Image (cartoon, rainbow, N blue to C red; front, side):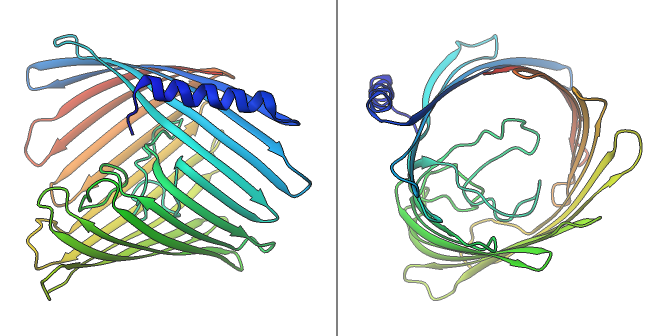
Length: 362
């Protein structure tokens, strides 16, 4: 969501003024500064790009009485990007702007916020409202403009209900809606013994961003997770689409099965495997295809500060393989990461890339 600098500054000053007038307020400020440089080699060509990110954040929290807590967050992202060949680009974008009320197990949050759930790690059928990269330490993702109500119970059960405005490029929807179309949904979280379960529903009556035709979609989600000596999870999604004026519906489904285990070797070798399957039955000629994917992850901490991670991704339809090896060192406020990647689709030439990122978070 992009806003002019004057609007962002006005909102920021309003929050600061609010902080100074409230009693018993807890005020927090943080800043993330990150520099990422990526080099890509394909055939005989080499390209280099850099991205500088500054993300300041302000948060206020205070108690009205023993049960009511009020909090708010404001943050934005300022970026400078260059490929060293064309003119650099500078961006200023609102990242989060929300207010929240917590009262006796109820939570009401409104504004530009992060909304995500599910049990899968990498291949996520329930990645409806975020684009979190599993390799990103800071888990940065675009937010959604939403009103979210949650109720938590003592047995760790929970009920969610939300209304939001569609935003193109948020989540992994195969069919993008026109921005600001309203959508609604709900979620039930239940502990079933040692299994954590979630049941989700989402509905949207939307216009396609490309052709402007109108559709209705009903979407159901299921996620289960068991944490024992061997962690096991399931995440699934099923959607039904109906185009206005056409009786033939389209449907789609996706399923992810995963497991993880830590071997007692050295400092502990973490192993993770996920299998993903997607299928579409459609009569509307959207060009959405079925597919099968695999994800394997191995993580090993070299010590308190250092960690190695190997991630392999495979997509059968494109015969795409993506292998990356990363090393990360983390201090209290400073961290850096080096990642080497190899990517190949079918018989196409291999694409080599190297990424270095330095981050300061305080």
